[in-house]
Length: 375
Ligand SMILES: Cc1cc2nc3c(=O)[nH]c(=O)nc-3n(C[C@H](O)[C@H](O)[C@H](O)COP(=O)(O)O)c2cc1C
Image 1: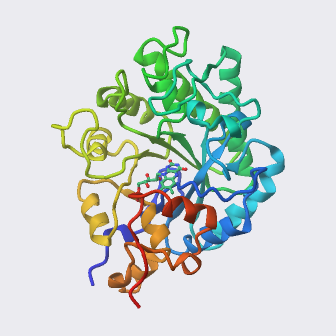
Image 2 (image 1 turned 60 degrees about the vertical axis):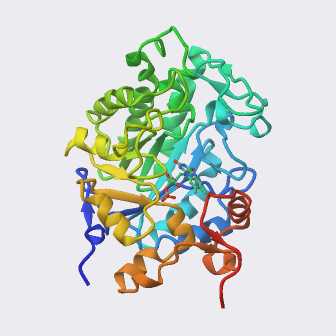
């Protein structure tokens, strides 16, 4: 069997080493306790998926109480959560993977019932385009400073908990993206108005995280996740994103993670443009910053093919829910045994916490699910 290129180790510029080039993509699992502490079921799920991959990026963790985006989300907004975060970091690292905490604020996407005052906030008071969406309250300048500070504090807690890194969640329509988006950001102060000013909040968050990370070892990893485009009009275009990417690649970030559903997918704004958004970004940044690709890479061949254009790292998400031992099966020459669909009978065997399992089976089309395994 040919050695798969993604099985080669990878060393970041800061010296951090991954045993291979596959990362577990960040996936919300709805399974933390109501107070934000990680649970045993959640840690068991991560343990099962940490044995092979180079790094595990956790589900997003909220940096302020007002930023909670999902029920059962990991919390990183209070010092009391550090011991439970440490249990999670230890679980992942104990299996040989790097542990990276994804830090986030849900902004206008946060469900009111999860928030202390029931009021989502954002750059501006513009509701997301979706049925039943709540109009957020515009953040005041001093509140913006507090959220930026909270990203730094979350990083400090991640360091205290023993994480090997953090990923700044600047993607998937949440608060950081909301500041970059001309749809959700209609401000005319220093945080909005021009493309340059829409970048100010994302860059201030990066700075706050970097400052907090000065207290960590040199090989502490700081990644940044973006979504390249938005469907809305106005909305983030690829031209906007290329400028943000340009700025981010001159920061001392360790990687840039491009969040798309399909690695090879084209534009969501212009159906005639079929170029892979990830590849376009890779071509633009070259070797200046490592790019992490992701999106419907189900098989080892899919991952190998995606790497042909020079993207050095790949994340796989649903694939590792469906097949926790994806990497081990590659390493042992058992690729033909890799599962690519979920059987409704296999929850316990796959070590998937019940809240995540229920979300999966109740959301048609999200995962490849077969009703009952042929026995
Ligand atoms: C159950 C589930 C939860 C997710 N939660 C997050 C999340 O917390 N943060 C994030 O950045 N992306 C999240 N995503 C997106 C994934 O990281 C990934 O980009 C997407 O699933 C495509 O990759 P895949 O085809 O390998 O699954 C989630 C995806 C799934 C399926």
